[in-house]
Length: 170
Image (tube, rainbow, N blue to C red):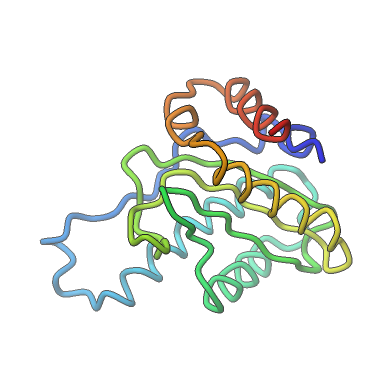
């Protein structure tokens, strides 16, 4: 599968707006509440990103589906990578987006580290093959080589596209 063919420059966000607040400022907020506030804001930005495609039928319901999927099990992997994904009737086709958080945000990653790189994937419920293939290829690419630094240093959408193309080639 050609990963780069699925990612369009307009679906790349070089810097998320969502930021963690300093720990001393969140002492009064229950940790679980804080986590879901941050996750909700990040997922909202990612939904806005894929919504740019014009291939999302209902932005708010797509966000609720992504949050519901995230509540089942975290999509925060390890080494700063998260792959939020959901199959939903609100995606008219397989959509892939990329966003980066230079400082990182708490996203309940498996290694408890902040997430920096977000690959969002939404697909119609019937599009299992491409959806699973993309997810597997992304997970394999990050397990075979550490692309994290390259993605963190990329300055343009074109550089992100080249990196995704390299990942797809193994």
